[in-house]
View (cartoon, rainbow, N blue to C red):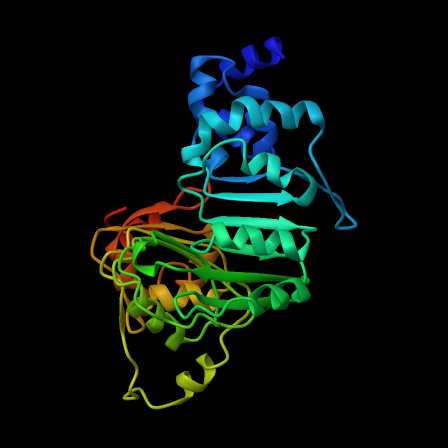
Length: 332
C-alpha cells in the first residue's frame, strides 16, 4: 500500500480525483485516509465523505456487513474523524447500531436502512424525525407510520418500482437546510432555510411542479434533477396558441444546476427563457456536452439563447466547448 500511495501521490490533483471517483467511497477512505497530508486532504473532500454505503450489496439484492477488520477501523477511527462531513448513510441491520453509536453525526439528514425489523425502525424514527429514512418494504413503511398520531410530525411516503419506499419525516421544516429526493408526491409547504434540493421520480415532472418547487424553496441555491421520463403536457402546450397563460418561473438565488440525469424536456424547462428565468451571471450548469448541444440545436436555438447567456460557468463532464459555440455562452 505504501508503494501504491506513493505512485498516487505523484499524480496531479485532477487526475487523482478522476481515478478515485471510480472507486467506492468506503474503499477510498479505508485505503487512503491518514496516509499522508495531501491524500488525507483529498479523500476528506465531500465527494468521498458525504454519502457512505457501509455494507456490501450483491447482485441478488442481498446485503451483508463490511468485513470485521474494515468495520472496526471505520467505527474506531474513520467515522469519528469525518462525522461532521457525513450527510447520508446506507446501512444494513446487523452492523447498523454499532455504526450509529460510533460517533455523533451532526449533519446527517438521511439514512438508508436495509433488512430492518419494524421495531428497530420505530426506535430509530423516535430519534430521526427530521431526517429522511429508507425502508426496504412497503409493509415496513405502513406499520411504522401507524404509530404516529402527533400532528407535529409531517410525513409522506413514496413507492418506487425498484421495490423500495422512501419515507420523508420531519418535525422542524423551518430548520431544514437540505431536502433530497423530492418527488411529485411532495405536499408543498414553505422551507425558507433549505438551500440544496434534489428532484427524483419515475413519473414526469410537469411545468407546474417546478412552480411548486420555486414557491416552497424560495431561497434555493443548488438543484439537481434525476428523471428520465418525458413530460406529458409539453406537446399539449406546444400545440396551443402562443398567447397561452403560461407562468414563467423564477429561481432568483440559484447558483448550481445539475442535469446529468435529466431527460431533454427538463433541460429545455430550465434553458428556455419563456419557462424559467435564471439569475444573470450566477449559475454553474453541470450537464453532458451531448445534452446541451442537442437541446440548443447545436448552439443555434433562439429560445435557449437568453438563459444560456446568463450562465457564468459550464461544466461539460470533461468536454470542451467548441469555439463556434462560445458566443452562445458569453460569460462562461
